[in-house]
Structures are given as structure tokens and as C-alpha cells.
Length: 234
Image (cartoon, rainbow, N blue to C red; front, side):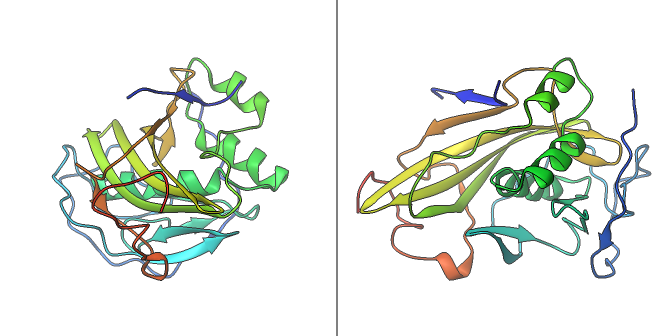
């Protein structure tokens, strides 16, 4: 079984000892969070806000795929196995969580994959089954690599968020553009992947960036990662 399908359009889990990121600055919060951050990140929004510009981020690499990080939105922790976790309980935190889920899910390290899935899959109807598969779908295979190029915050509440992440997959002279929608739930003080459905991750092809906020690692900015219209070939 996989965590996702093609698309046309409680128990508290123990968090492994982890290496903390740099000290995190205070951020405004909308009241007291009833389920505070697993690592002490501040900031709490109960309702979604329009994110019309790319959040400020630093970009690092896991293999050949760049992932965004922020001292306020996360990820604020790295587990001994290598996956990153702990995101702010805000729309921005959900966006960073979705982008990092794409990258964490591409690891070819079985130990990291197993540990990440055990952590990131929320309690739900299909959790045990999905953990046992010890696999998660990657963006379409390519010989050149995959780069994040944008996102859309489809919905947000304090309990659940849906984020669509746009990407480019390159191979030879072909450029394939697609988008992945992640259903996230706030559980145990972090944004985790919902498991009430077998299709917690959904893919689709895209041909333009309409509705997406452009979000690209500055080192990856080219005429192919930021075109006004996405094409199948250069």
C-alpha cells in the first residue's frame, strides 16, 4: 500500500531524543494552545490567514532535494535517524511541515524512513497499516532531481490543514511539473500526516502556477523553476 494516489485534480507516540535547533524567538500567539508544541515552539493560530508571499526560509539539502527551514515555523528538531520535525501551530508551520514531508519522504535510508513514518503518521483508522508498509510515495521518478517551486494553503484550522506543494521533476531534457496535497492534523504537539484516509497524500500534474505562491530555493532559480506557465519540455 502507498500513502497516496494519483488525483485528477489515543496514544501519544514517544518522541526520540533529538538534537535541538538554535534558540527560537518569541512569536505572537492567538491565545493559549491546548496542545502545545512538542519542542516548545511558540505561536498559535486557530484560523487560517492568507499567505500571499513566500515565507522567509533558509534552504538545506537532503540528498539532492532542498528543504526549507525557519527559526519560528520549523522544523526545530532533528531526530537521531535524520528526519526533521516540530513545526509551529500556525498556517506557516503547516506549510513548512508539508514541504519537509515531501523531502523526508524521499529518503533512501530504510532506518530513517521507518522512524519518520512511525513519528509522522497520526493516530487514525489506517495508521497501523500504513506504518507496516514502511513506504511513502515520492514525486514522479526522474534522473535529474526534484525541486520545490511553490505552495498553496488550501485550508486551515487549529486541528487540520491541507497544503499543496508544487514541484518540478527534471530528467534529461524533460521537465515535469506536479503538485502534492498533504492532509495534516495537529496531534501530540506537531503537524502530522492524517491517517483517517488511505490517500493522505495526493498527486496531480500542473501546467501553470495559477494560485500558487512561488517558493524556490534561491540556488535553484532558473527559467524552468519559475516560468509563468509550466510546460512539459524546455
